Image (spheres, rainbow, N blue to C red):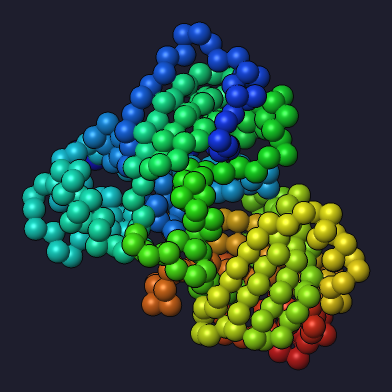
Length: 367
């Protein structure tokens, strides 16, 4: 029988080979017993769900929101004990797409579910994890320190949860972790397996080259308002020809080098690597083409997909564009009310073209 408790909590998590320093700083209570568990994570490279099986229970949470500080708001949307019946699978599929067209059983054990349902989605990646968890309270937040065995690798994770994101930020400041990146389980496990980006996660059997498939829409600003402050972006181009775009970007306190290939339809090759902030600043100030792109990025979750809404500044002031990433061009996307005209195939709205031909100079020509 399926069940779900609609308790939304903000979460922050980090991973490292050893977190001994954090363990010492949080002073784990002596009565915080270690809990051992063998778990199965099902990683969906394109979804916003976190699905795992623990203690004979399928547990699915959905990412609802990412705030300006990088904290993530997760909502429990499904929980049911195995064996799962057809009604359970239908309920799970309503929040997490499952291939149910060829169901042959009335009920499914864990093994049958993995072999006859999950395996039919080639984009999913199954990860078996052994955990040693210690759960306790720190600065009013639920804290968890975990040692994980992920296939042949071992690493540790520390997390904080609370309904109020300010409580988590206070705890992070106390620990000196306020400048560290939030890394959820899906991303942390992908990195542990050498799959550093959702765009690099292919089928369960094959590791494929990075490929970006996204749809882009203008935003009706009379219907959309930012729910949080967003992240400030500053980016410039070292090359902006259509066959190859080479970009550097500062996003908040992080910086990246990105290389993109030729756009074909809604897809193109994309590779992204973190680089030193100081190097990026010099490249933006002294090497990149002018003008630079300046914008504030907001992230919102709608109908199970994360939308990135860019509010442009400077020479592109007045332009607001939303993008959503999809697994393949045939995917159907539920559109928010504020999504206006689709511009996925309109090169004027590519960031490199907005740098060469800013919105302010042509907006009235197409009004």
